[in-house]
Length: 193
Image (cartoon, rainbow, N blue to C red):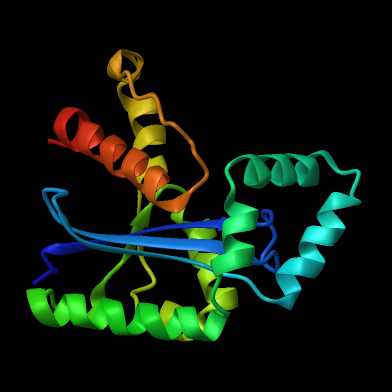
């Protein structure tokens, strides 16, 4: 029987490549009605982050300029530099946290848990690169809200035009998870059921 819990993930990084350092990891656990059970987030920083930031500052690529502007404006770079954990410490904290959540709520085996999110394959790729032990705890399947968006757009274009979702896209993990879960609720209520 599937777990009554859903594990949502979002990451913020230095870019879209697999080796770009992760700056922030956020996760929420909800029930299948999308009620919050628990959440955790962490900032990350290491010497690799500082090298990557210095490279961004001298890059001429538009994508690098966007990352530098976005994460400077949101305060993410400075917060991560001051309070960020090393990857290993963050990984251990997330492993302990998710195991305790599943013990407390008897949510089934973590190895049966897909990861949920928006374009979650990206977050999975980042997590696999920087926190592989944690990544391996989950099932290989995803529940991806961007798939619901694309299906609704194609299968029910009139319904899709009626939705009035306005994601804030703060590019911080917890507000972005708010947006994703709100979007999931809309598709659950209006498109799937």
